[in-house]
Image 1 (cartoon, rainbow, N blue to C red):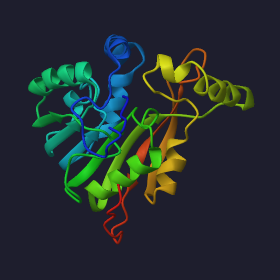
Image 2: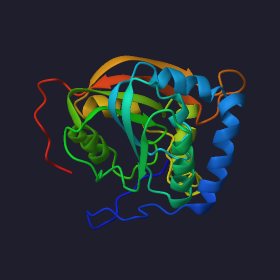
Image 3: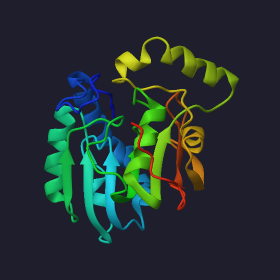
Image 4: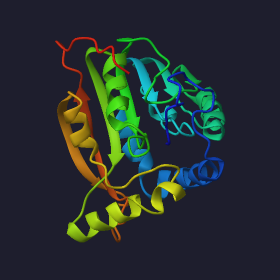
Length: 233
């Protein structure tokens, strides 16, 4: 889901405005739950989580139904108004407490070291400043806190990677609400100072022809326990 800075360093109520993309995404994502197996991916992404959780780029709230009962609270940040409205409706049906708030990934509207886990699900592709966004993730996580991620990015052979780069420089971000195809989320997490845990590559859809958006990574990372609090961002 697209997250972007407000430009002033302060949170705006609508940090992102992509109403056409939001409508299309809301419809496609619901269909993908069964047709592409996304419901099963969400179950694996969130299994075993506990404590206080921050979800960044919650979209229309499809993760909410999959949080286990061991989670005490979810704060879900979503900048796009239409998707945020749908996420709030989904929060009412969730079995764990979910609070949906406006905000952007580069300036998260929450306190430092306040969360046991952060969930990143199809969001790093669309943040405007990837490094700053991941710096914010480190800031809000307690030392030793966990990141759960399911992200798409660069993959395939040389021809596919070239196609991804060309699309990123032309039509894809316009059509996809700021989405990019050629980012490497695993490398970005590593460069941001996270300790990578188990992760695996996933094709979506798992069968059929691979699309430029098919190359995904599902896994876990941690803020190192001895990591000092970052104040930048």
